[in-house]
View 1 (cartoon, rainbow, N blue to C red):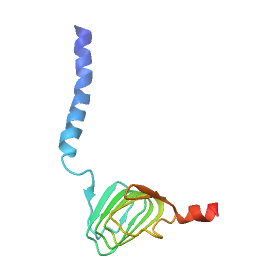
View 2: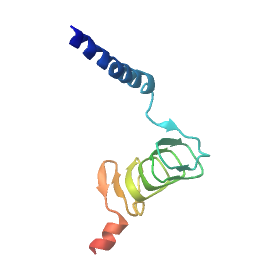
View 3: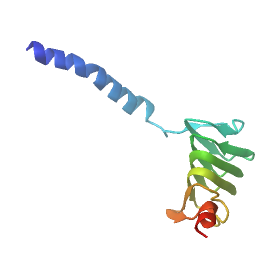
View 4: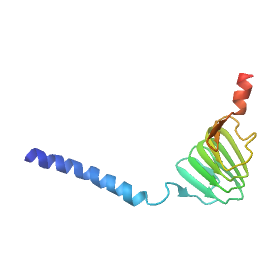
Length: 126
């Protein structure tokens, strides 16, 4: 009986943590809506929407939605309907962008679910 009670008390903090994180924080998107004035996302999750200025993602998990110009320099980036984008390093996914020529400089890139080669791979394999 004592053993069963001690196991119950050990599980209570875990259950509180699980319930708190599942229902309190994940009701909305996992991204933090980032103002366009914060031009560089260094870490964490950033979501930019309808920004006219140049944005940079140096190490975070970034989402660019309907932005003018965005550069991924080492983070994990998702581009949705962004006019000018470049992936200089990191993992980049371009969604709903008709032409991605010269966008992938040196990262691992996909466009609408299909892998696209980077310029560095052309240089090294030629």
